[in-house]
Length: 440
Image 1 (cartoon, helix red, strand yellow):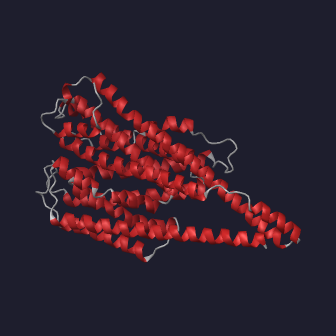
Image 2: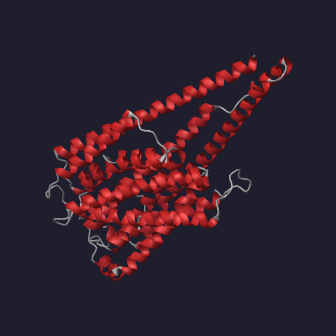
């Protein structure tokens, strides 16, 4: 069967004339393996680039540290020794521009994973409910059960035996991963309830408030500083979500949203956003103070074990709640058939893992606050997809809320640009000063 783009699969889940249910399971599985192969190859390229960028960054840091030592010793030696030091300082350094390009390549790849995975996963989650799915715990399980996708990459990017950073005690790191997993499971469950009780467009706009919560947690846990632009971004995104909260309508969507559950869904979406912001800040704190590394193996380890712990908690909840006994009937009653039921859940799990990989990678390479900003920029994508695929209505209030949210996002991005330019100028001035001292 020829390759079918993923967006046609989504359309087939919604189109009543779809013949997806008539396809044989082996052919669909074969097509699924064919379509996911480029994704896995792209992930492999991402992690190769991430590993190279980290090594180059460490090398540059070490060279600059050696230059500082040479400059200090040069002041206390004779002019002849100073001439030798100047010759040593004139040795070619690794190109900083190349290192920055690699760093930005890693960041951009992670951004693509976050935006694409998050948008597709939330859309499929809404489709799951609209087509007859009703298990909240199953919807929670698929958000973390794709963790084994990281195993091949983790086996390839093993921790170097001669790593300069000591490995944390096993009991300590296991407790951290387990704690993050429990928080992830609770957060995923709240998101599952919120997505059931809210239209997708409203859900996405309310979830933009996670940036506000993350700004607070980053200030206290990660020592992030507040500037006028960052504060402006937080305020604008808060207003954006508040505007959605006070202007909802029961007629704004064609999705099967339960009546009278908007207030509960709104509160759960806010709570889930706060919990997610806390999780990102705790991840950054783990990278900075416990793992002391942002290499590929550290990112993959945190993703794998925290999501594995979340999956265990979610599966336990599925059996304890008794929802597992109704899954067979749910599959039989799914509007698009059993194959579409399984494919929807499978692609949801894959999409969430891609989004998770991108988020953890951004936390390791940049910061938790920047990760939340990128997650927030996906806010306009989900409402647009909801209008196209699910028939949600984009009234004036939602359009204004979306524009305010984009303004808030651009405000933070501009602050990050100013910080980046300032750091480059500072580094350039330091290099010029060291070269001048060496020549003297």
